[in-house]
Image 1 (spheres, helix red, strand yellow):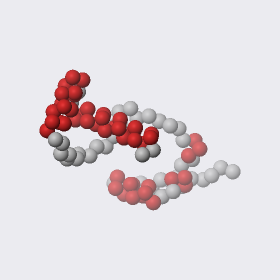
Image 2 (tube, rainbow, N blue to C red):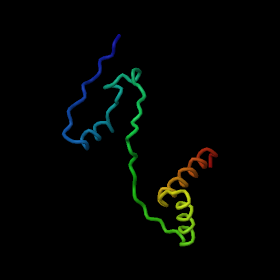
Image 3 (spheres, rainbow, N blue to C red):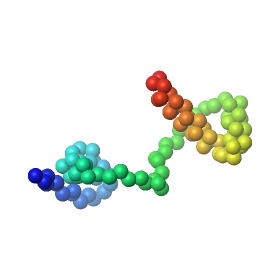
Image 4 (cartoon, rainbow, N blue to C red):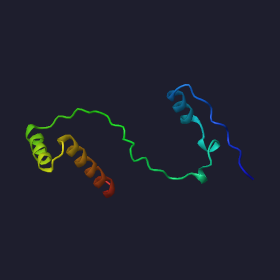
Length: 93
């Protein structure tokens, strides 16, 4: 027996669509057994700006390391943070 799926309504805005999908059961609209994994290589993750205070000596050392690697110091900080978070998650701490 083939399942009949509901039609997806037309939305007036992204907010309206977001609210709809937050409450709707997507299995009533899609056959997830036929879903395929896709990769979006040009999709950039959302970012959020934060403010962090660092001792001057630490920021100077980070800038020194970044300069040696020819990367922006903010990028190096993100790399260091991502590596440490992954390490912590793997170790189960």
